[in-house]
Length: 341
Image 1 (spheres, rainbow, N blue to C red):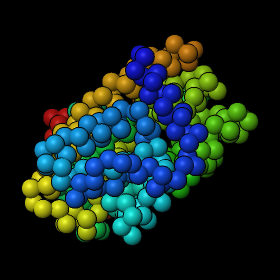
Image 2: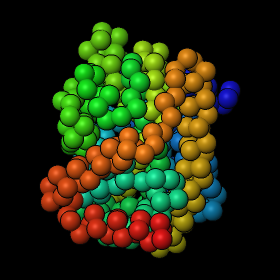
Image 3: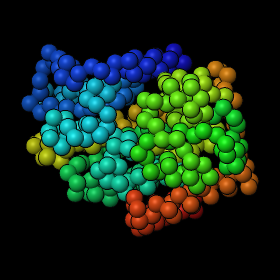
Image 4: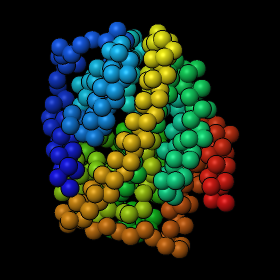
């Protein structure tokens, strides 16, 4: 638990330091011949950064000092859309993106963010593994290399009133991340008009009563202290949020074959280890949230559960042909059906 509290504290420090300038981060570190400038909103001291720094050390050692990262943590390189622009002009080479960011590059990959799509971690890992070659090729056509899936985690609903059935959302003032069509369509299917806001405006909106229902991974909600304004958390995940580490195809082509292989192999291993750590920390965060006084609403059963799963069908149908082709959704279903059998 102390380690988790440290992660939370670091995340809060990051929120206070967003005004720092990108290139103030340059240090006196030895500069490898191939230095990958990597951006992420994950704060200094977080599990994300610890794993990336460990990878940087490993790459430098195994490459004889030829390859390494310069890590711009805590959002100092800007939000995901700003970072994307910087990658395209060569100012940044690589970044960790959530669906909001990589959806700007390849909208169809947002099929993985559909509500109530996955039932457990095994399904998530299987779909990610089997579809990685396909999505890697699609990203490549748009000038990016998919270095690895990056865990964001299961996202849960937090509210001031218990949500046990879909109809319980009626009358609630629900936040939706501004510009996210998946979130908007999900809540519309639930019969409500969400209130679109930037994530940076959520805390104020909660304190003023503008909204009373939000969604986030438990660790994220705890770090942002949203739970202090709310009373309940649904145990049933609303969605599994997928992230990805991308690098400019133009830059990776400059790497010698041995360094390219070293980078891909190292990141694949690091992301697997990071995923396990974040899943464990989110479980610890649920316990901390419960200890803070929130009620964890159990996963519904029977007809009530079917109602939530029915939301998936509505949203998937509505967004087919708009965000992702029908064939991509069918491929996901085929993989899941194979696992369930």
